Image 1 (cartoon, rainbow, N blue to C red):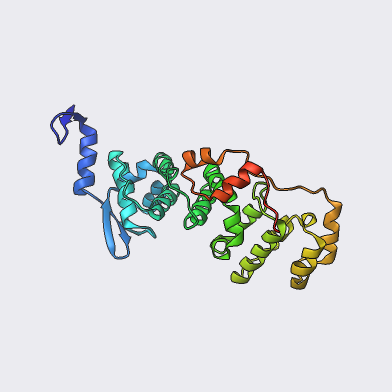
Image 2: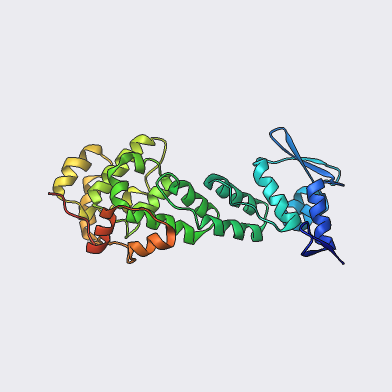
Amino acid sequence: MSVLSTDGTHPKPFTLQLLEDLYLTRRLSDVKFEFDGEFISAHRSILAASSPFFLSLLYEDETRRKFTLQASSKLFEIVLRFIYTSEVQIDDLTEHETLDLLCMCQTFQLPFLADIVSKRIDTIRINFENVNKLFQTAVDLHLSSFAEKCLQYIDLNSQIVINKSEVFALFSRQLVENIVGRDTFLAEEIDIFKALKCWSELNPLQDLSAVWPKIRLNLISIEDYLKYIQPTNLISEIQFLNSFKQEKKRRSSLDVNPIKLQLLYGFIFTVNAIQIQRHGHVEQKP
């Protein structure tokens, strides 16, 4: 059996129309979710059938009718609309809301909605203001390809990242560790040391013990070590001298055309980054 849709042209199956009506009217609802004093009604059996998360939450105690969720009521309504109607309305969400929605989908164990939201995130243009949160969300949700996309953006803007402490300071310790450990983060090792030292001073409670060893000390001159590193006592003379027993492994630029990355990902980077890509090295300081 089918019923006419609202425009009178495309018939909807009766069951789908019934679920949509239940969503719109909340008739016969038997549970409520609280968000900072605001309540949203829903149907226990429908939510429980939609995901293992709701099945466990709602049927652990079938007499319980009110639940508190640490989430956005706006985003929860998007989740409910999807569960009841399969409709997804996320085009007007901000970047942060989209990321929070993806986290919510993972928590609620809704893989189909998570896949839709992930594709939406892929369209977000990366910049220095959002790359840290985008990277952390990608790591937390095991979105390896998107995490790599964030790191490639930083690779292509390595000179800005290294030379502007206010940019580098925005990054989390995990992102900093990933950046410094990459072969494609093209910068002078002494400049990387200076940036890390500045970052540690701005983030005194963060432990960089796993990050300092990623600096390629055998690419730093003795003069620079004595002038910039030795006075800090962050890296000992023994560590510095022992580094020369290891093979020198220079950093190199991404083996990808930056213009292609811009077209694919919407990257914005400097002319300097493109010049580095073309020449495959960092311009030496006079």
